[in-house]
Length: 210
Image (cartoon, rainbow, N blue to C red; front, side):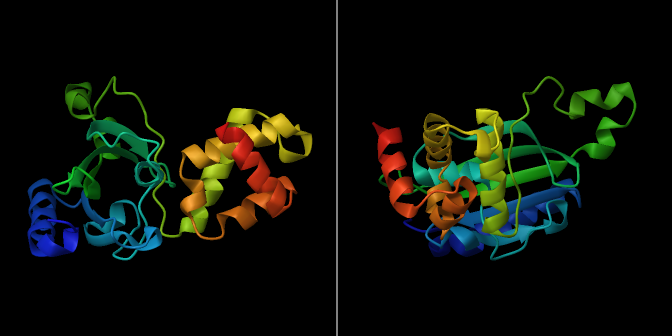
């Protein structure tokens, strides 16, 4: 199997089966990374959990894997949060071809918000003690780019107007490691955000790699 589409019916039925097993609070997503980044979702069940649908993009974690920054190991039982504050217990499993290249993902996002508010006897179901992972669920890659830029600024600790050349290079390096420049027209947005030219952006990007 070289693409998810070659076994699409299997993955679509898998998503339906998992969602049926765990109910309306369990979102199951199938990503096909042979598709453009801004439309990798080819099947989704209970999309209301994160507000996504077929044709929407992957998350920032998927972007890091496509960029090659992340090793692509499966991640189980990590805690994430939606834009409206719902708490999710998530698992991301990556599908590989015969050559060992990642071609897609099966992601499970279970809304445990109500469980976390229940009695102490239910706490074993909430994933207590797991380390939070920042993952952005979006239906528009521009929103994801905004999130990545804000996260990078938080790391630098300064607004663009107060950043030195070194700060800007570091910010660009952080964005590159997160795969931000795989997003269409991201360079223009970063240039505008930092008030630099495209020429300067390319120079800073080269300096960050060295």
